[in-house]
Amino acid sequence: MSFRYRRPVAKPLDLPFDPIERAGETWERTWGPASAMRVATSVMRVQQILLARYDEVLRPHGLTFARYEALVLLRFSRSGALPLKVIGSRLMVHPTSVTNAIARLAAAGLVEREANPEDRRGVLARITEHGRAVVEAATADLMAIDFGLGGLDEEARAGAFAALRAVRAEAGDFPAPPG
Image (tube, rainbow, N blue to C red; front, top):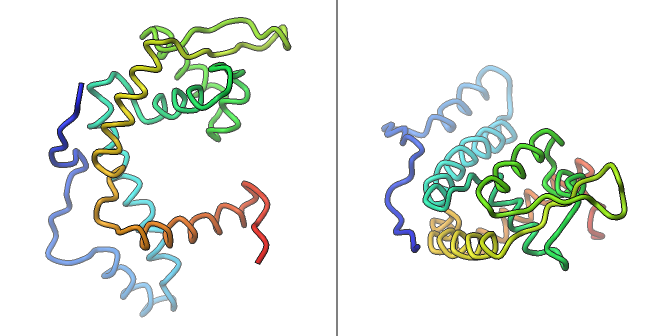
């Protein structure tokens, strides 16, 4: 099933001005420099926009973005299976969220749950052939819309990634790169 991109589901604000810029101007008059607030607020708004776009693209595949991410992670694993604990850690989500996502993926026949032979108390999620087909089709549809980032050229994407990566490294997600 190929997805033809329409307009995003995120409700456009349709304002005659940029509300974040306007808030920044007021912020500066009230509290001082607003660059950090402008970036933080923009990141949060862009997250809303992107998630709405992803939901629209993934809905025909029976996926949410969280379930899509879990399938991609399983698709990337050497054996096609990972412990739920590892999935939660890699996706940076609460164990309850992982359990819920895997249960829904299992109900849809996209993954199978099985006992972890290396940890009697643990559970493995294994992607099925149907799950592989769905993740391939869903990925093709997300790539067809440039993951909602068609308004940015490669240089802008690289710059945005580098800036956000620095924030993630500073927060301790991984060791900061040298330099």
